[in-house]
Image (cartoon, rainbow, N blue to C red):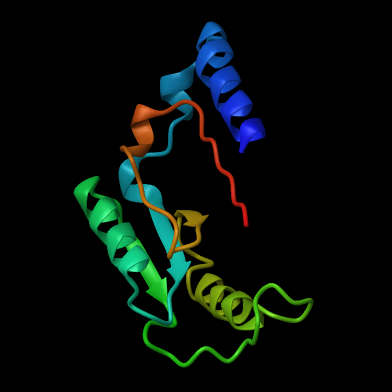
Amino acid sequence: MRLRRVLLFLALSVCPLFSLTNCEEQRVPEEKLLIVTVATQDTEGFKRFLVSAKHFNYTVKVLGRLEKWRAGDYMSATGGGQKVRLLKEALQEMKNEDTIILFTDRYSVFTTGKHSDSNLLLSSDGQ
């Protein structure tokens, strides 16, 4: 927890000192960004994720919606295969599209702004 605070402090205090060259030209157009996630259950966390994405006008594609989870324990060495399989199938269907895919978790994630509002993205996951 302390490491997270230090990293957040550094990001908030040091990163604004660096300017990004041609920042506006490098941004992804909003209509080309697609958030993809896998959700087999409609949990409260998943509902919060959808509400936050809708609030900021993101397009979200949910894979495996209400399917039975068959991949076992995602923390074990062989777990999580269902998520990978669903993502692989979806990417095959979208391979000819000119779209930027953002693959994210769904039960413990929410969006806090439009993608054009940030030059820096911080992410962490912990037990």
